[in-house]
Amino acid sequence: MFNTGEEDKNVELRLRTFGTEHHRKEVFVVVNACSSKDYTNNIVGVCFVGQDITGQKVVMDKYIHIKSDYKAIVHSPNPLIPPIFASDENACCSEWNTAMEKLTGWGRADMIGKMLVGEIFGSCCQLKGPDAMTKFMIALHNAIGGQDTDKFPFSFFDRSGKYVQALLTANKRVNMDGQIIGAFCFLQIASPELQQALIVQRQQEKKCLSKMKELAYICQEIKNPLSGIRFTNSLLEATNLTEDQKQFLETSAACEKQILKIMKDVDLENIEDGSLELETVEFVLGSVIDAVVSQVMLLLRERGLQLIRDIPEEVKTLAVYGDQVRIQQVLADFLLSMVRCAPPPEGWVEIQLRPSLKEASEGVTIVHIEFRIVCPGEGLPPELVQDMFHSSRWATQEGLGLSMCRKILKLMKGEVQYIRESERCYFLIVLDLPVQHRGLMSIG
Image (cartoon, rainbow, N blue to C red):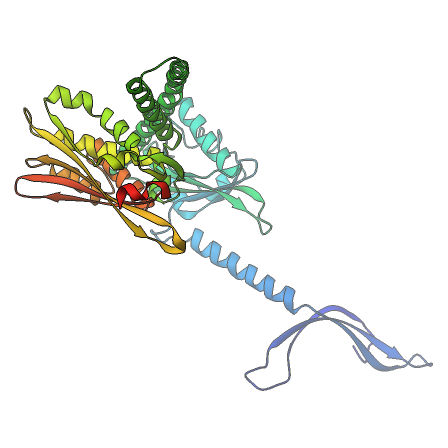
């Protein structure tokens, strides 16, 4: 160039920087070269103008490397690579790997650019009826829209007419900017056992969804009669009632609040992960005991059992702070379990309550309460105890209820033990509650 005067443009040079061997690195420069001439138009030198493109070069090399790796993996004849096909945003085939060629009998060149729904799966690879095509179209367009599909049953006939049963997984494809540009689909050839297991799994999921709908329906419909009960109670409160009648009405209202609270917090995950919201209100301990006992009286009469209350009189008027409704729910569940397990006839169930005072930090006075719910005989079945303390998957509905109550009690900083002795068994429930100062003398 120096001799001829010809100029070169966009010449890429690869250079190395100065420094020790450890710190030397490569630099890529794009150079434009031109000659310098004197007043007689003779070439006397050369001029280089360069631009550092090291950053762009590194990114491009990585892209080329990744693209090469992608092709090497997707189109590998290795049997571990699953059948893979892809679509663009218009549901046209943009990828058809070697495993798909072997599975369907159709070559990549025949498939690229064709519509996946209708042309490829429908004409080349026939499906069983319009319903199968509709379901495949929904799964594909869901993936293009950003909603992935996992292990969807997908069956078709290959080029030779052989029926192929597979599981389709469809995921969205995105570009470097994160924009969706199509779908990426994998096929897994499922064994009959796996197909059956997936069918059972989907049936269970449908059953679970149905149960959730039923529960939502029940929770919604119970609100109306409860509203009627609440209104009726409000009318009764305005009448001339005896002291006993007022107590009955108060107990009825407490049970109604318990139902509403359970319906409101029906999501068990809140209890499991400890995020259940607890209220702190002032209440009289005797009112809670009355509401708890009322929930087992019918069953006690049906089974011919006697209820023994060992509760000091001064405790019944003791005002404490806590979540009244949750405490009521927990005690009622434990008491009801004992009533169910007590041996009839002429059996008995005893509820004991023992309070004691203790000073907490910041000068707050706490009443330490021990509840004992006792019955003779063998008590709870072993599987019920297992459900309550150890199981994450419950064998019985009653076990689920006891387990949830134990966790609610734990959220209130309380605890429960189940103790079996030679001739009797009992729940020992311990709970600490802040107490009103005006009630301290009665406990002392």
